Image (cartoon, rainbow, N blue to C red; front, side, top):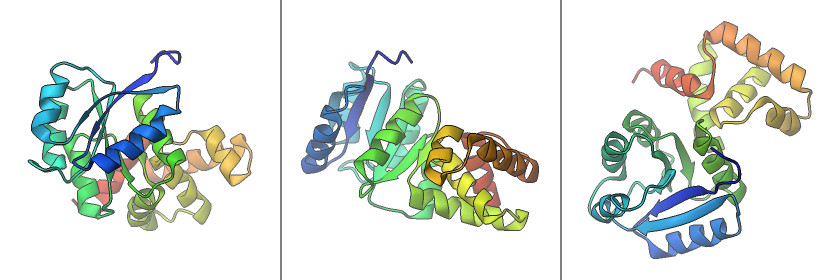
Length: 208
C-alpha cells in the first residue's frame, strides 16, 4: 500500500458510543481514514456493496448476527478486505474462531490507542496483530514443549503482535542482530517463519 494513501477503515459495532470513541481516536491519525460505519451485519453488507475499504474494525457482538459468522461471510465475499476484531472478550475460543473465520487480528477494547493503531497498520501492510494478552496466551500454550528460553518467548509474543525486528530491539533494548539471532533459534526449534505461520502453529499446538 502506498504510504501516502490513507488506510480506509469501516467501523462495525452496535454501540454508537464505541464507534464515536474509535472515530475520534482515528481522526487524528493522518494515515487512517474512516470511510463508513455500521451497527449490524445487514447494514455492514449493504455498506460494503457501495464502499470498498482496506480494513474492517469489527465487534463480535452485533444486534442481528455473531461477528465471527459475519467475519467468515465477509472474508468469502470480499477477500481483499482485511478484518480486525475489536472485542471486550479475551476468550481463547473466540480468538481461535476469529482466526478460522479469516480475521487477521484480535485486539481488546481496553487496548491502548497506540496498540489499536499498530494493529491497523500491521494488518493493512499484510501482517497480523494480536493484543499483548492474547498473544501471550497463544504463545504460552505453544512454546513450552519446545524448550524456548524466556527471551525467545518474548520474541515469539512480539512476532504474534506483528512487530518487526527493529521494533523488538527498541522495546527490549537489545540490538537488531541479537533479535535476529533469537528469531533464527525460534525458527529452528519450531520450524516456522512469519507471524501468520506462528499463529497457525499456536493453534495446532493448542489441539484445535
